[in-house]
Length: 290
Length: 316
Image (cartoon, rainbow over all chains, first blue to last red):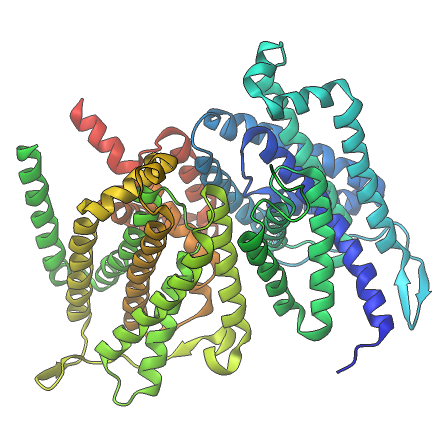
């Protein structure tokens, strides 16, 4: 069975677009893990909540950009509250308890979403509707815009971490919590802020994803699972690695979808994860540890 | 020590006696409810071997449970006349096979990575079972008739709710005694050593990976047993039970009841099912909102679970 070259190219672009959205989710997850050893099981649900908040904002104001901003801010504040109430007491305990706590939160958020917004999918209207010709397809500009926006947000995060004063605080806390505290950095506050940033990024990707796939309460689990895979494949706590891994995994799934049904294409990324764990458990996109 | 041991066995016998008479005095609904608690309790107990004794949180117990269910279903559907013991054997074999497979990969990883890997495996098997409609019945699952309770060649009776309850109770009690023995054996001690300090256990010379693989297999075997019991009780196997939500519930049972006690997870299962029953009267399908909040609060404030909490109170 020969697959036409055009289809492969189209799937390449699709894979990169999906990969950038995923990278936005995964970089928040990996940032949170890196700084406080919290595996946030509810991360995908923050994506989902962000999507719903975005959809609600669009329904009232009709402005996509306002919705993107509102979702990011609302969910960031919500994330900060969540961290302060449930995760702060757990710092210093076994990291496994944070999985349990965030798992509980995830259950609550999912059910809350059904209760509040019902089981039907919300579509977010894309801000630009134009298409361009890609072989035999009318390819929407919006998809490309998504990738660019996601890249811009991740780039901004990178610059902030690299050069911003508070970014340096974050990196210092990631490296050595005790030393950072000794240097006068308000570590608990940094933790909360990082969680808020991660939550805001998740919410932004929820809004960006909205026009592509629609927002339902189920997308949370899907995103959580993918983000986990990406974070492990990319090397836990490694920002650059998880971005590369996001694109890698999304490309794999996109190509697999050419051959099998999309539901089964997910298995390809699972297999990628297992192979990574077997042969290179430190992650594919990180230098070999000495 | 001596005295508390006696107290333990007295308590055990009292609860066992209560469970034996339960189906005779309880109304239909609660009779079924108690049987179900026992089955979920067995599943929770099996995962306690990993969570409580070895310090590995498995989010993949639904796979072992589900495979036990589906293999039992396969035996009941293909082998005529349907035989309870062959179904049990098939279910255990299926669960053991998949547990070996999962253990081989997952035990190379520690802590969080182990949890994520088991979660991913549960999704893999869910997708396979959900999409392989010709064999597994896909979304609809498989329905079959209940096999009779029999001793081959001697006698055979149809299951009544009471007989089913006693059968389940017998299996769960035996499993409990076996698991308790295992956790107190040298093998169980090594598992606890791994939980407390893995590098040290390795330094002493124990082959940690091998112990972990056996722990996952053992745990998967008993989870499969619970799956078979559930299949026999409900006369169907459905993909929902392979979904990771079931694994999550098992973890909830453990945390609510108290990990590392074997009895705790059963108490946790009972507590969770009661909460679900109670809250679904008011919140219908949204019962997970209050239950999730209670669970999260318990993780934060009561990490030893109900049983640990009660024990500490009694000791004060």
